[in-house]
Image (cartoon, rainbow, N blue to C red; front, side, top):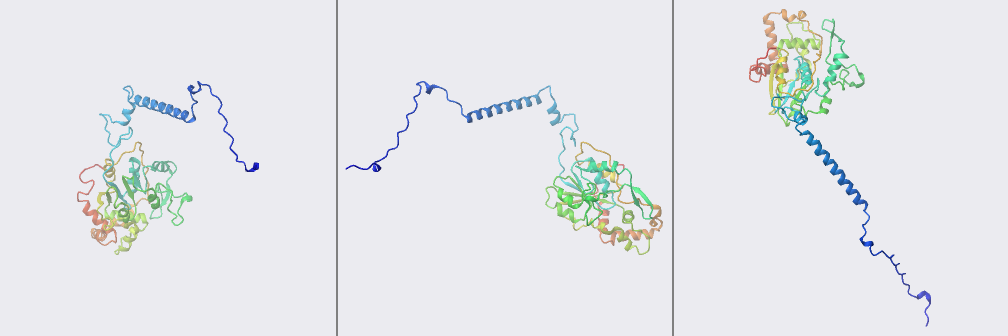
Length: 370
């Protein structure tokens, strides 16, 4: 019986025979692959870089080159405290210094002077990293003083502490606050910048700020309080608020109007904290002594410049102040009221009266000619 061809088993075709090779072909070198070429190039690059680094370091440490030695190691004859020009810097202070900026105690001048002289000064009236152009701006662009008016209505020309005439960056709710003015920094801007790298913080703000910001900080806070004579401070505040003090028998309302909301910067209860130590000094009478005191504790900037004084109000006219013509009894009664009956300032005057007689007076032990 013959089967049909469609049922026949099919076999796959046999594989083709390999081409005949020369007997000596197995001894020929193989063609290098792409991976081997890349590895060889990497080895060559690494060798070249290491050679250049060795040559660079050897030139630094050579006896005929003192560049590395002069820039990274102090010389024996150097007074390397607070030096930055050759890379030698002093150690950071063990505390963060703070200035409780009481109104009319020279705080604007202290903040500006320290920001121009030293590193890591942070304040609402100037920061070390950007106050130099602000100071130069005051020197050149505002060389013509702005027009101000004193209590008597007389025109005066004094350079103000802030320049808010550029309306592009003004806060719509508070027309007198320029959010981009680095000579008068807004609180929201200060919080955005932070205080973690600050050795000195100056701020004219409520007393709650210090405990809220620095409790649990990586360094304790040494807070400096400028103290001014009660009567002298009152008259300066009246001039600042443009409230005339008429020396009437019932002066309580005028006193509170002169201090206004500025007197909430000192609160003994809010400033009482284990991480906060309060110190004091006389200001503005002891301003130069305080600047010298802080100059021994902060790192000096590599370049410094002369501070351009700024004013926040017209100058006082002491000849028109009636208080100097009052008798001793009236002045004594006013001083007693300031120290015992004012709403907030009594805490400030009480603290200053005790602190200036104690070891917490920063300028007591070291006599400095002012």
